[in-house]
Image (cartoon, rainbow, N blue to C red; front, side):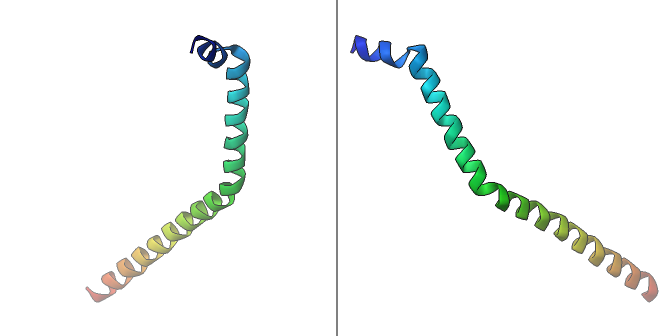
Length: 65
């Protein structure tokens, strides 16, 4: 058990583990970044649509009075 903890806490093992985590992070980012851009674009378009609908409602409301 003592040998296992020495291997686990060695700087070389920790560095290899960090590199592995970085590679997994880059892989996940490469797979989802396009979807993130689509979500951002969707939110911006949705904001403009809501603002346009609000503008139309306000314009029609002032004509009725």
